[in-house]
Image (cartoon, rainbow, N blue to C red; front, top):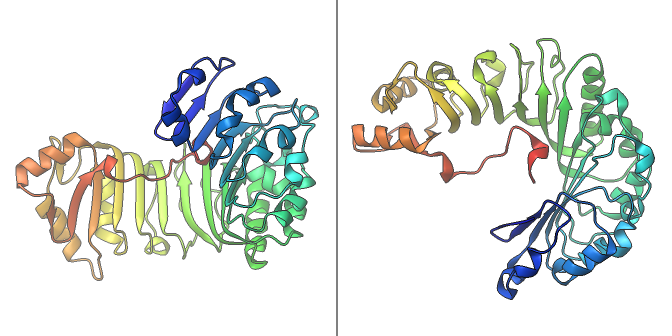
Length: 356
């Protein structure tokens, strides 16, 4: 089945019959392809006519195909490459020639090995050193904790410099402490300027090391945790905000994303975090200043006004809350507080590997 979105197609299974139904205008507009199948030469022939225009590609590792010669060399305009490994046995990963090539426009490379066994069970790819040296145009590299850790010597000894490094995986002791040391060492060697961490699990003990370049932290399935000093942290996201104690060392946070929260949990950022300018809540429950789908904009504005140096906050809420509050106050903003619809802004998922 082929699923069509704006300038993007998603191919889910072995049938390409729907691809043949696309009209020439639609085919010419496609810039992104997401595959959930293994390719062979016959399938590549079917889609070859549009590969030259593709800028965004998400695809599973093609273990039974000479991937560069038959496919990637027909994608000269590729800016984003998301390669994910669905195999659990590295013996099936037998074709790495695509890692030995130059991609002139590639800016963001995502290498996802599933993080199935934790950092201590990662795979080493010696070809990565050549890949990074041949592609210094890559400005953002995204991968898992354990793939990074297992390939630490390769990356430390490479000449690549990223603007941004993204890491996702299970944050558990003891290996996470070694990963934190590695990340700080990479930053000291100017391998990356900024760091984003997507932690699938966290405990009170697991994030005790301060990450010097960390500017965004996304926590999923989190237990109660007090975060270490994070002076450069600007973005914080989590699925249950009650687990977070807002410490003094998080006062520079600017953007907050919550998947589920009561408004009492949101209120601590409005009252005590002066630099926060954007808060987005996917699912919001009643609390102080929020009842029957209506936010008390006047009370929120007063609380924000008394905080020294406080910036104006925009709160992104669902359509029902937005309309109920607007109808009550006949406005969507009062000095230091404004509300907007959630769909008016796109923020990253808590899961880095869920999308490009």
